[in-house]
Image (cartoon, rainbow over all chains, first blue to last red; front, side, top):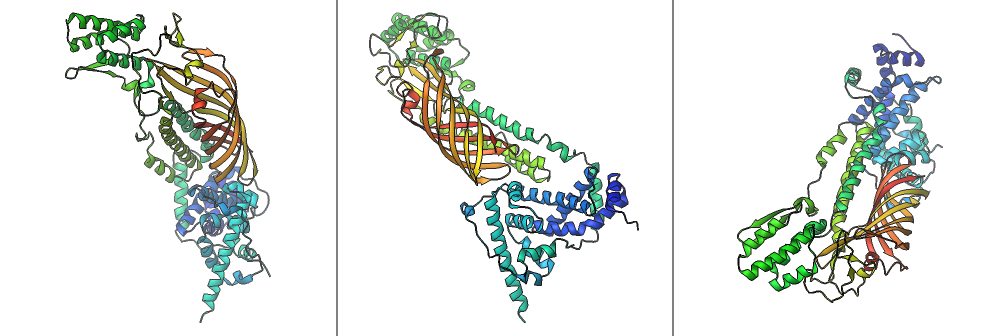
Length: 186
Length: 425
């Protein structure tokens, strides 16, 4: 089996090389699917989102500019996250509560109990958050967006983003505690 | 010890989920379908997405202007002055005694327009009554022959009543008329594609429907402004021998030219019916988002006020236009990339640039200061540009124009419908 570097893979995909397209799918689909599971609340939606993002990437791969190792995945990941965000923003109007000004400072205390939870369970916990909490948590904590960027992307305020993140973290902490308690029972 | 979110990031950032075995085959099939599909590249389509919002927005604005420039309230006959005058004159003729009809004929000089025909017909009816040569049906027939404006006259032979078919010109406004948009279609349009373009189409259409609904509701509310001062419109007895008007041949109303603003004076003894239209405002607005959810909004508005006055069988329009500068603080309680819903309070300074009474221009102008509260819907066309529709509640502060301005004098507190384009930063 041929192993292409990212640059060659992108070039061949832009020429609609079937083998290269299959290789791109094989190489990135698993990670992208996990990413989509974080933004969706069911596996079917996540699968559709992942496939749509990959199709979009392949159909516009001629615009990709190679910037070193890992840049192809970063580029596809960005497309996927943007599509996931678009899906969140168009699902419904987000009525921001009047108490959004209030900064809920969730306890930012150190807690490594999350390390005891399997990845698939963590994904499930994240998927059980509301769409807005899920999006803000993923964007800020995992995908490296700032509150300012989140506010712009989701059409909310920075304080609102911080407040939603705080609530999301509180809910996740509770879920993790409950899971550990449950798993410690004989 | 790491924070919870850092641990989650470490564990999930590079985590790979196992895909079903058929995943690759499914994906390649979908990829092929996407390439053979006739659907254009979404990236190309999105360049035109602005038009998908702008088009229904413009259509909604036109609909708003159309609806709001029609009369408000339950009586639709004021839509067309000519038609109204014909109907009323016919009614007068049917109900009046011969001597009164002679008096009417004395008041109104014969001429080429519809009213003068009616007056002449009144004389004919008087002659017919004196000579006892015809019954009421034949009189009505003669009236129908004489009245020849652009309206069709139907005569009910049983009741000998006359009815003008003015339905096209005067169709009453209905708040429950079917929408021109099918909401079911709109929903389905939004669900069959993830392309942003369709969402914007749906948003644009939804905003147009919302705007049209809002306009319909507000135009009904506008009926609130209709009021009857005297209730004896149609009385043939002039209140004095010295009516408050003067005649100038060749004008639209040869023997009735109101003297502005005396005609609007509460002391004017002539019976009147006054109908005010919902004021319209079109503007360009500037919004500074100076804090979370709070913004300072200003800009420039063009305001149009219109009233229809009737007195002694005549009707005329009073239209006034002003240019205003509103300043308001808005609070957005719903904000998304596409839509902004807000409430605001502030004030406005308006300078009247034109006044038109019965087809004649007046020199009245001046400054008007008002306080206002507004609620609004803004559809964001791009990052900085949005189209807004906002009903405003206006309270006019006393000013030099107050006494001369019947609308504001009688409605110091009134509703206004404003729309326009806004630049936000």
